[in-house]
Length: 148
Picture 1 (spheres, rainbow, N blue to C red):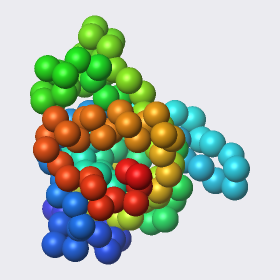
Picture 2: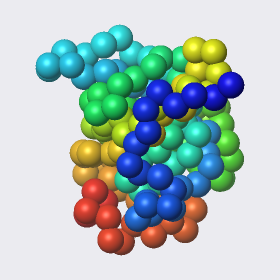
Picture 3: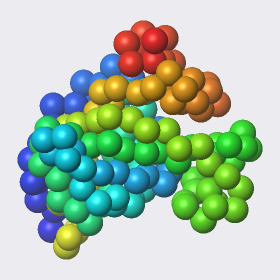
């Protein structure tokens, strides 16, 4: 039975930018008072210009700060496929570090959570990699403050 851990404000109906269902490898660390947790690995469930959803066995609190790394495929042909860490190992992926916060978390199964993440800050290099990635999916990022 599904039960909400807590509900965020960024529902699909309120989003400024669309999300695409996509499985990408994700690594993240929880940031707590300038301290980082161990690296945890998971996968994305969907991705958009200013956020994403991911699935994790770790329950996260709303507003928890994260330093997450999206593993974006280097090869343009692989960008349009769902993939996992093994594809990154075989074909190569570009790590994109993004400072983020947890917007919501819901219980999906026993010890499995779907987590909404809002992107807060990204490097210029990471921004360009994501812009190129989004162009392949024809996602419009032109009005996003994060992508400028």
